[in-house]
Image (cartoon, rainbow, N blue to C red; front, side, top):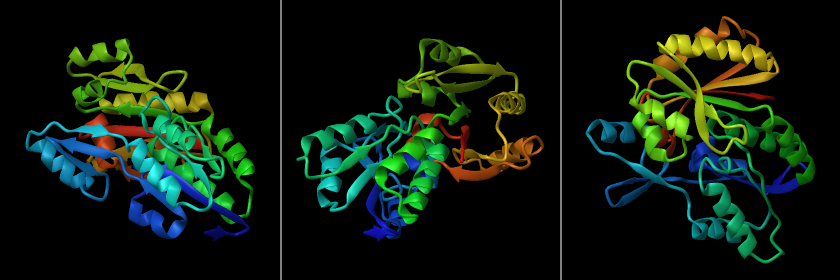
Length: 283
């Protein structure tokens, strides 16, 4: 498919917050992650919605997740005739990146596939896909687009405030220090990515969620967040709480750009119902 002067297909997984249906007319292919309940797998946005998953969890089920298999990724690659730019969830946060690289290595050299480690998920990943589409429309070549995205990637920061710590603990991607706080009660832990952005670790502990947000506001000031930054708040079924977090941030970053998202089923499975994911990236 031709966009501006550039023939390129952008591929991502559903942790980038686009549904497969949304991608159809955008030159964007979304590969769904899966939620596993019992012995059945449900594809993000296709077989299960976020609201449906939240009801299932409320009924007492304990879901797990599975990334798209190498075979599924290979099928997408084989069907694509254009040059491909692949923007998966960050390496280490999921096995998706490694599967997408492995699938690329299994194909002949006549397929032009570029897999970029976004080192992030959700809001910033959504923005990277947005930026890639915009630059594609402007006719930039794929090397120039990758260079521009890498500059943004280095500015991204992510923080999660879980309501139920056990969901994150089951994900298996916590550092030992972060895992230990699961035994503490009546706290609002703030978790973030490790320096290499491959695992989740403890950032701070506060008494209340509002104090946790206040601590992040101060940290965002230290990061130099300003009108050039996008601030996203993604949530596990608590839209009003997410809106309140946005308002709290706007008191200090009035000129920044904001977006609110409901997390897809697979990310809710990791973060848990009621979780709040606060992220930023330079635009």
